[in-house]
Image (cartoon, rainbow, N blue to C red; front, side, top):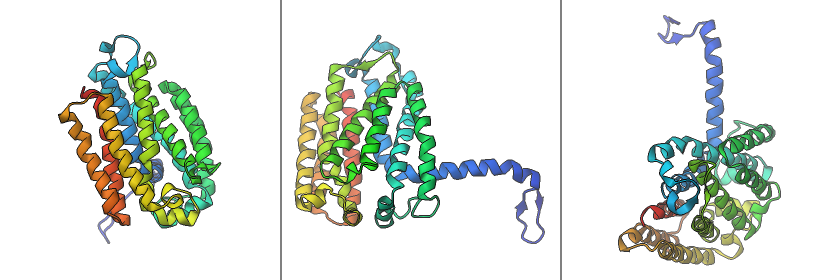
Length: 316
């Protein structure tokens, strides 16, 4: 490295440039992957990872296997990167498949123009080829992590949602997402606890309850994307049954599931406030605060409420 006397900026020698080139390519690739999953990371990967980690801390209730004393706090925290890797890798399959089709690109030009294909960072065909590598690599990772069954079914659901356009059909879309959440959550818990453990009957019911939450309230994410969904011809609940029906049902089911979860875990008044207050905020916002920006904020409030449910097994 030497100094350029004209602009005083450091200039790399050819040998250092050769060494830096692979690092720059790796950085560019990681940035590209992040661009694909960025919009779903906080709202999908993080909550599902939280389900696995919080569920592992409540292992005496949610799983069966060897003595739960072997699941120490240190062990569970050490499993956190693996749980996150499970969620991110499987999410990448879905996002690559979801964002590579012509109809998705057209929708993203309206709803999410910052995504990599509308930005010209990668072509649809290049995304398809990347998917051919990501799918087998992720399936191998799922096998290594002890969540092979969940991973296979997640890949099938991704195919149904994207390639078979199940994500464009009213009610089918919500059902696929709900089942996918159940698989992500049970897979996260399996990775967090290890292969010696399996869901207990109560843990299975809790996973189904959370999928019920997703089935009936996940449509809140569609309120902010109606323009792009209408352009694509996607039959979301808001467009198929009407926005008022969608908003009313979301408000009702957010309150219903908050009470149902509190009853399931026999929560006292204090812990119930954790979900009760956030549920009230979501319900009031979805009914009375209406604009694209406001709906985006309501979506984030819903994500916080949804994630707060995962803490409930620790509060009994």
